[in-house]
Amino acid sequence: MQDHPLGLVAGGGQFPLLCARAARRQGRGIVAVAHKGETDPLLSEEVDQIEWVYLGQLGKLIKTLKKAGASEAIFAGSITKTRIFRD
Image: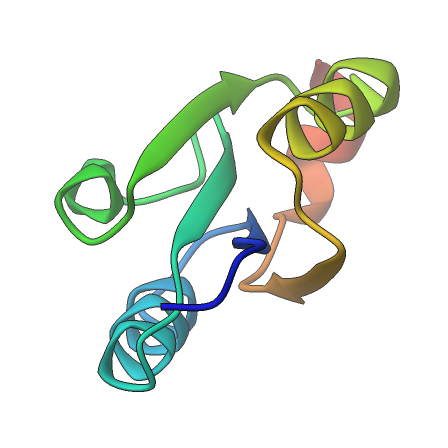
C-alpha cells in the first residue's frame, strides 16, 4: 500500500464503486468524500474512510482529504442537475 491514500470524490452511479475497487486492487488506501443523496452507501464497504457531505461543501471536502494525507484525488460519478439547485 502506498504511503498516501487516494482521495475519491464520489457522486452517483456505479463509477465511484468501480474506481474504489480498481484502486484497492492496485494496493491503494482510499479516503472517499461522498455526496449525500447521490453516492451509493455501498461505497463505505470499499474504502478505508468515508466522509459524507452535501453538494457545495468544498471546504469540508478539502479538509477531509488533507487530514487523511491524500496527495492525489479523482472525481467519479454524477451529480443530478436538480440537486445542484435544490441543496
